[in-house]
Length: 299
View 1 (cartoon, one colour):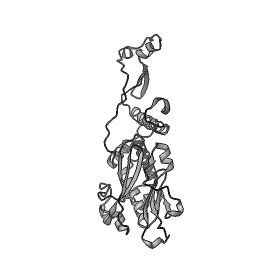
View 2 (cartoon, rainbow, N blue to C red; view 1 turned 90 degrees about the horizontal axis):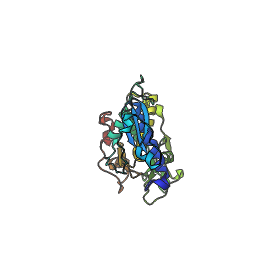
View 3 (cartoon, rainbow, N blue to C red; view 1 turned 180 degrees about the vertical axis):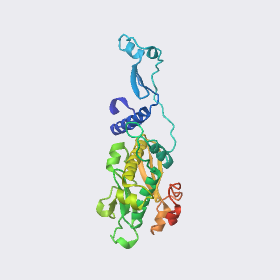
View 4 (cartoon, rainbow, N blue to C red; view 1 turned 120 degrees about the vertical axis):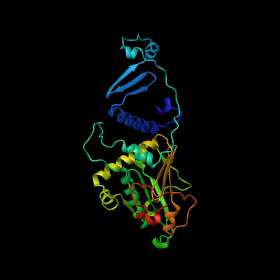
C-alpha cells in the first residue's frame, strides 16, 4: 500500500494511520452515530450500530459486471469518487487531548454504557507531571512506559554534584514504532545509559497515592494508557502537537517529536538556560491542581 498506492506515506505511517482510523471509526459506530464513508468502489454506511457496504454502480459497470438489483436507497445513491484533500487541523494541545480522551468516559470498548466510575484524566496528567518533576529535582530520570524518558546527562567528569547535568529526553522505541514517529536530534547521537543519571520507572501505585489528589491505582493506570494512546493517534496523523508539563513542552510535527525544557525549571536546578529552553510555559492543569503546590514552578 505504501509503495504502490501512496505518494508520501511510509509502511509505518500506513500501519499506524490505519490503526488510528479504525479505532476512531469503531468509537463512532459503537456510539450509534450515522456514518457514510466513501471508497473508490462504494460507500461504507452505519446506522444504529448496523454496518453495511454499497458498491457503486459505476464500479460494477467499470468491471463489465451487471449491476445487481438493489434497494431504492442504494440505487438512488449518487456516488462520487473521493479526491485526496488536506484537512486543516489546528494545534493539538493538552485541552484537545483531554477532550478526546474524555469522550470515552462512561463507555467501554463495546460502546455500551458502563457502571465503572469516571476517571479524571486531567488529574492523571497532573499526577504524571508532578511525579516527573519530583525525581527531576533530585537529578534522577523518569521512564514513562511505552512513551518517553526524561532525565539528566551526567557531566563529563562524572562528578554527580558538579551542578553541570544537562536535561535529557528520548522518545520510547515502542511508542515510535507503534505510531510511526521519530525524534528530532540536534547534532548528537543517542546516549548510552552509562552517560545518564539513574532512571525511576513510573510506579502507578506510588503516582496515584503520593502525586494525585484522589486517584486509585487502577484509575491512574487506565487513564495513563488512554492518554498515551491518544497522543500516539494524534502524532500518527502528522498533526502539530504541543503538550505542556510543569517542566517543559512536548511537541510534534510531521511525525517528528522533540522536547523543550522550561527555562524557569532549569534555573531552579542551577543550570544555565540553554538555547532551546522556553520561557512561556504556563502552570498546566490549573483546573485540577493548585499552583500553590508548585510554588517556584508556577511558570
